[in-house]
Image (cartoon, rainbow, N blue to C red; front, side, top):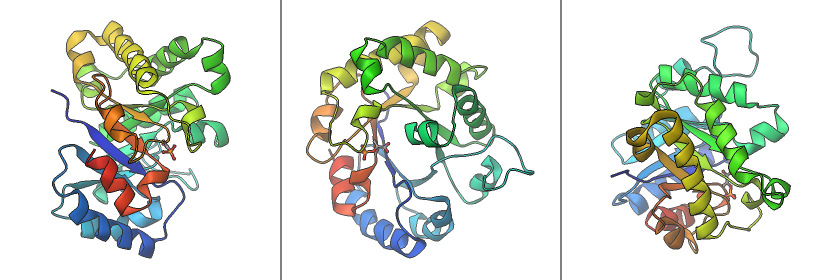
Length: 248
Ligand code: PEP
């Protein structure tokens, strides 16, 4: 059985002091969660919240990771640096990175491989725009994104990683995919993994839904057989809201 993983993507929100307050409030509210719980603060907050999360069931995630070990990459952070800070997960290929920062399927693959090599679990984001959905391109697009993101990654690593299906039209818009839409597209993604790696890997890989998931819709989304958790933006910024999603 796949253990669901619910991760909060704080995006560019929360100073180190605000981050410390948020995780301190969150800890008691999610201590009995049956899913894995992850928070992904901005890089600048990681060192501040790590000691507070020590001994709790909340794991630390980053919002990105660079593929190089070190060197002249101003503004970037390596997987080894994150690992040393106690980071367990790293989001790669979020649609905001693809849209605003030139992220491509190739760089998503490089980031995912670097994370895995350092013992960090990548949360690989894929998803279609509204026009792509309306033009019937969703299945082909997510299949291509997953195929390219997983290029040269062995089955044993694919079984450890997380894929987040995030329809771009549902991110931060208040428009959630219906539970049927989310389940169907996640099934397409799982079928892509099956055709690349076989049944064992397809049944092991965890595939989240992300896109305006919140306390009001988490229970029905999580009731679907293909949905193995959520990547939560807006609703992860308040402890009470995020804990309701985690305790769906
Ligand atoms: C996200 O940023 O990954 C996300 C799903 O955001 P929101 O929950 O705000 O739509």
